[in-house]
Length: 82
Image (cartoon, rainbow, N blue to C red; front, side, top):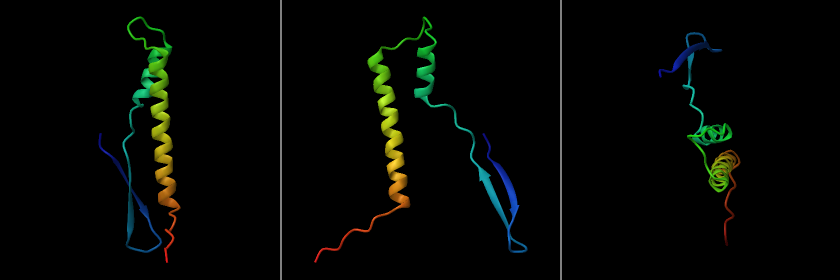
């Protein structure tokens, strides 16, 4: 899928800024599995322990990304030892 490109004027004459919007991502696999299991179809069922493991791993990855982004935004300087 190609990305869309938009040209915006800047405060300096003769210079333009080009912004690129990323393509839309499909829904995550965890969301698809949860919806399919919730529909109670005959061809797709999962046990409760598998769903809990899937939800827990998805939550752990979101928390991990959150921590990485916070560490990048608010970097702590290491203390110098004497």
